Length: 354
Image (cartoon, rainbow, N blue to C red; front, side, top):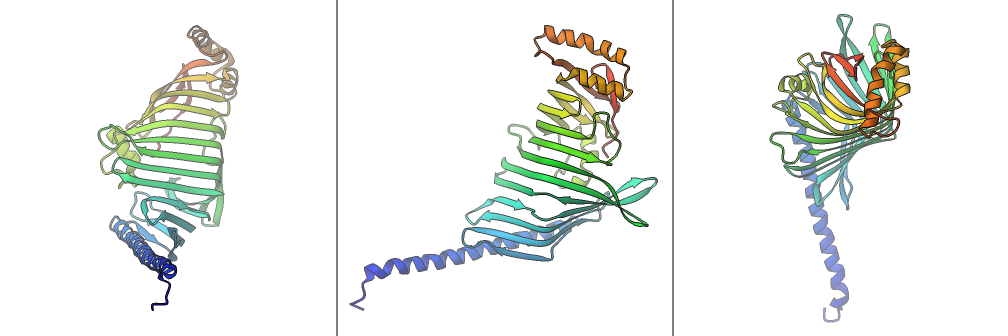
């Protein structure tokens, strides 16, 4: 023992002890994470929602805690309209020393099964989702310091209707990119959230009636705040829209930009749902491409060429006097009694959202 050179051996002993200690601590944290998932599964079952999977593995040692789920499934049979979500694979990871930040990645295919009332009966549909990126991040530092972010790239959705003759293709949609950022709104009494949305190259086909503006949105961006949320939110998501209408939930849009076919518009305003579930509100907007907008309204048979020119001529002159950019027009937009008004023109009928 006297001949042992402790000055050389001691650092290796300390490293080994540290590694063993860290490994035991990591296993304890991993077990806590898995226990939290199982508890969440039980909590959802108490709400009538079944959460299941084919396989669940916990790994990621030594730098992180990573949960890999294969064959994930969520069933809500007791919702006003029953639905099911399925994913081939799902990965969730967090740092062992920072469990309040979770990153979720869904690299595989997803499916959503739901039903809609059509022709006097409930028609069953399946929405198949594929994407290059389907990613979300959630940070929970305190009751008022929560942040949710999502990023979806190259999303493709196909809808299939289940019929007596087998599955029938019933439309589809795609998006180049969808982004979302949300957090609790500061200094607001009651639950309220600030939400930023951004979408690029959104298109759809055979997903309902074709709007006169077309079925392609090149760009959508909005900064919003949602307030006066219904009691029980977010536990009653299945009945959120009717509850929001009854509670007077408001969506204030401080800034938005929209490029949809002939529509090139920026502005701000506020919207809520009326007693029949239709959007209702007013916006102050700045509109470009006025000639293209008029041509689209005329081609859709909404107004005549002469009526459209007369309707917008005064606004164009007034906008010039008010200092609006050359080629742009200040145009009030209103949604009232199920009708969308672009200035004085009734441009579209608004259907209930639920």
